[in-house]
Image (cartoon, rainbow, N blue to C red; front, top):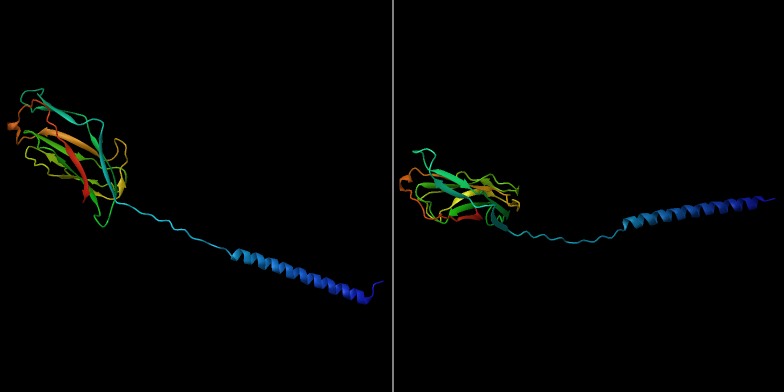
Length: 205
C-alpha cells in the first residue's frame, strides 16, 4: 500500500513534468516565431536606357507610272492612264523631348513637272502602334512652277511609334496625275519617260 508521502511525491513529480512540457512548448513556439521574423533580404539594380530613334524606309510593289494619250472623243482632254503604286512608308520613332516633342515626314521632288500636268502626292491615314501621326491636308503638289527642293508636309504630329515593317504597312502614299489647265497650252510630247525622284524625310516638327 502506498503511503500518503509517496502519493504526494508522485503528484509533485507529475506537476513538475507538466511544467517542463509547457516550458518546452513555449520555447519551440518562440523559436519558430523568431525564425520567421529573422529574414535576410538583398537587392539588385535593373538599369534601363532609352535611345532616341528615327528610322524611315519606303516600300512599293511597283513604282507609279502614268501615260498620257488620246481621248476616246475628239475635243476631250488627253486621257491619263495610271499603273503601279501606291508606295508605303514604314518608320520607327522614339522621341527625344529635349530636341523636339514631335516628328513629321516631308516630301520633295527632284524636278518640276512637265508643262500641262500636275502630280499630287498625298498620304492616307497612318496605321501602326503609338503616335504614328496624322496625314497632312494637301500633300505635295508638283507642277511646272515647282522649285526643287521645296518640301511639303505629308505626315505630322508623329511621336514614339512603330508602323510595322510589312511591305504594305504604314501610311500609303498615293500619286494622282491630272491635266493642268493653266499650262496645257505649253504641253509637248516627250521622247522618253520623265522620271521624278520623290524624297521622303523624317525630321523634327
